[in-house]
Image (cartoon, rainbow, N blue to C red; front, side, top):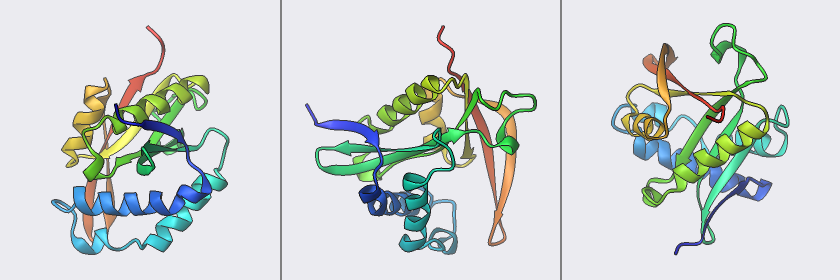
Amino acid sequence: MADVSVRPARADDVPEIARIQLETWRTAYARWLPEPVLTAVSAEQAGQLWRAAVTAPPTPRHRVLVAQEKDWRVGFAAFGPAAEEDRPDGADPAGTGQVQTILVEPRWGRRGHGSRLLAAVVDLMRADGVRTALAWLPDQDTASLAFYGSAGWERDGYARTLETDGLAITEVRLHVSLEEP
């Protein structure tokens, strides 16, 4: 059996988190995002953003987790309270969480790391009193949409368009109830 785990990210994980993010984006999104968009963020810029997320999160409910296989960091997740503009109208701010990202480096895919990350995120959100979780995903990211769908997440009918370098990217919002049946 493989030695696998999910744990809170530490400062020494930041370079690997940034590398995994950039490598995964450049591999998974190359089919539908132009190269200038994929190369616009440097490893240094990504590292600075992740260092802040890991070492000085905006609230105690903002967290970054790392998935490991043996000594290798293979993926990560970031989540926290849902931003006001991302929540459905009338949603309870304290009871609504948001997954910012779950990424597993493609060469480590299909080994359960994404599922373990998502399960850990859900467990921690529930412990924080979150009753509904949200995630925004690119509409063209069929692999991630299928992954979340297999875990019971559903589209709620909302979409938004992000503009970058003259390119419009449509994201769809997914949600899931975290209340125990």
